[in-house]
Image 1 (tube, rainbow, N blue to C red):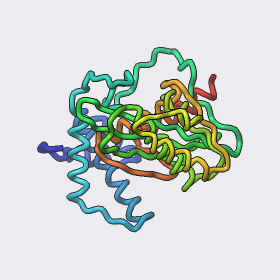
Image 2 (image 1 turned 120 degrees about the vertical axis):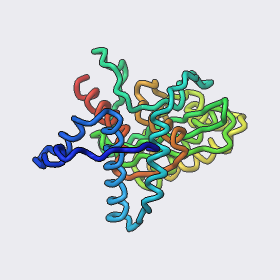
Image 3 (image 1 turned 180 degrees about the horizontal axis):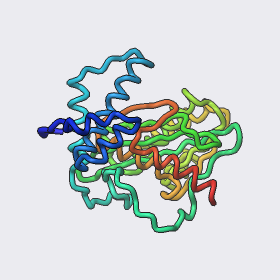
Length: 271
């Protein structure tokens, strides 16, 4: 955002029909259009925070947030792999090419009256930065809660995955206390959760805390899945690392991951 913008020309502003905004965006340069959309998105967020939560966000806070956000989106994509073999901290806003192939194992909704909690962790071994992502959905694929949280002091990717499981179970117990399926793409942590006495790890206390949180739910099933079934939680964990920011949202997700929510539902419908 640290740049000088020119205002839209008078001819553009005269076009005040029902699709005037789309008209302006369509005629603007790609970078200017992206900046405009980010500003509008932030304005809508500020409006909702004031209207629904009674929390006013100062304009300088929004300016700083958007500047940092824009810098992160404009940064080169690092070709770095963590020790789980995941590519880390990569912007997720560019649509993927359509190869015409569906995932072999798309996200599957839970049974009626159950919820599904998908969790994932992101860990940068070179810097120690880490974050977790949590997505809670019902049988229709509706998002009941989304969260992304920065993790400090993590020592391994598996420890971050354990923290993701713990956060997912704690959030489910607090906000959606129904029979729960917890899904993670880290088989080791899932195995420890199923049999916590079998592990002797440095992060064993996190496993115990996760098990304690699971006891507050009517029923819990721990399930290991492939990464192709865990994309939404993965993107939320990357968001935490990329923005160095934590948040919990009820009944919605950030705009940047909405397409993954729709894809999961659509992939299941056409399967």
